[in-house]
Image (cartoon, rainbow, N blue to C red):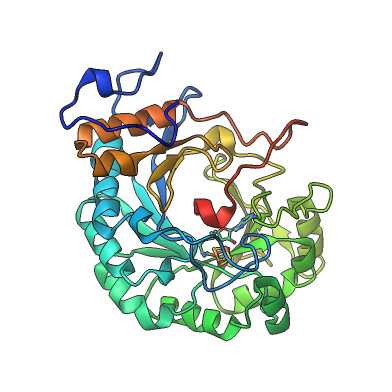
Length: 355
Ligand code: SAM
Ligand code: SF4
């Protein structure tokens, strides 16, 4: 598979410059060798963040990406356009690092929305500063938002994120609701440290009419402290929540969806659990990812990346870029491989990939 240095591409669609793939059917979409098709694009736009969540970032933050290596708003929109128009992508989600750290976020969204007809434009954020910018973002074309929040206890939040910013997150959540981005989804990473506050978090979510989803912690923390035998799994969480709430499982409309939904006290409130480690949904994965530096990463756990920025800046046309993207997807690995004894963590941490 093509590595980070791809050389100078041609402007025309010269077969000699095209990636070589064997066995790939001549279809436009992002198909892979395991029968999956990617329609969901995660675009990381920065490595910077206003928090330092212990399960994600190192205390000092990630090494800064040189400004010239970061994709510009125009470059991001060009790749989004190729993804939607030529590759069949239907969901675009901006992430990071913290997307709100980019001053040109509204411009990124506006330019992307202009070339992404028929696709949804959403964002995953920690919510800090969102209250000041929500109207610009919605006006630019943002249609959905997920906010990450692991605890509603201020001291605990400060320890977990290494920043005392819980009130700012609450302000962001209120602003998103007031702007009509509902039902608002809240993502919480499940850790031994957060398990004690999980029922309080769910109670807060029910009272505030937001849809809470717990996510099993993955070995993607920059500090490399994750250990399989210490992680909290979905079963343990269900035991803890079940002590305060009655949880029942309605009929699952989409058994391949990552989140298992439970009705809380008979509904209508629900809680979701994404068992990314213990109940791998790799077989149904429909994601492709762009890093902030413009490489395609087909799997969270696959370090094999294809450098689209070099193609863009080398003058490649959209057909050529789309073909390299297809080749990258064809080489996607079957799954994260965490169950294997020889599992090796990826070189990038979550904040450097874009969750
Ligand atoms: N800063 C934004 C935020 O926190 O929502 C966007 C980027 S963050 C990397 C995206 C998502 O990844 C967040 O919901 C975060 O909780 C999740 N995440 C980070 N590290 C994780 C890990 N080790 N395991 C599971 N989820 C993780
Ligand atoms: Fe920042 Fe999001 Fe990572 Fe927390 S999870 S450190 S908010 S990028």
